[in-house]
Image 1 (cartoon, rainbow, N blue to C red):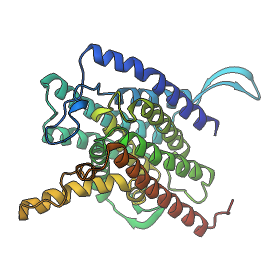
Image 2 (image 1 turned 90 degrees about the vertical axis):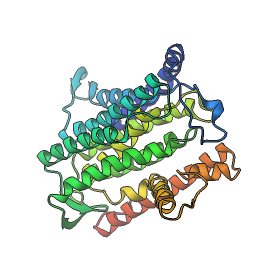
Image 3 (image 1 turned 45 degrees about the vertical axis):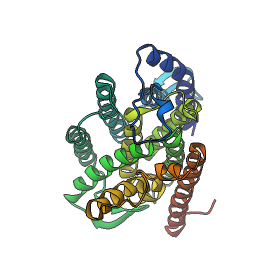
Image 4 (image 1 turned 120 degrees about the vertical axis):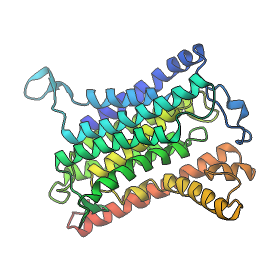
Length: 351
């Protein structure tokens, strides 16, 4: 529990204190957001500093590392010890940094070419698939369960198709979080709720290893989730409407990539669709819009992702963001409810 508090507190403090410095540095270098002409009412955001996700990722890394440092123990008193890092924790951190790196390159292309479009789709997906592929290899070497899972393995071994699942989840979650990053505070606030859920889930798994035998390094996953919760909360202080900085693709890709990694390692892959239901809905809105328009030349939404649809209906941006936070919270509550119900069904003690 102490390690979780340290990780979350360090990440929160770093994020909330370092972000103003990042804002000033980005303004001096004229690194600002380019707004699509199709997004009505967002022209005033043009030039707002972006790539703030670098602060989020850096805060998570520092929070995770310092959570392993012990300066005092009951037996030795004042000391300096660094606890061992587990394979599962390091693999999750790889997913975080790897996906963030692809997002950073995407943001850098936007900045260098002074446009709203970054990497070409084929290069972006190639990079994401490479990161996911390395993650899959690492998961296999750690002996991560290849069973399809909801709250626990479902005794349905995916075999080689587990690799396909890894590729789909990591790239899908990264792009789903990216699609949700279209309004001030939307991705950061909803992401904080989701990582709050996974902090609880992974911590609960670490306290009940006899039930969650297939979870890989659950204590480490709880520490990382707590660090991301703290980092996003600190960043949200500056990203709340009206935003003074955007996280950029480096931030949204990191959020989605880490979410998928934690779900895979904790053996809650299908539960991720409930906890991250908002990101799933944002992705589906784009798929539906593109699919229907291709065959009928008609639009289901005024604009996709569908948070823009409600904005074009006349909802103020803050109203859309807060209501979407509520929707994200409902998904998180349902996910935690399913998880705890299964815990009780598995013979866990109600406490």
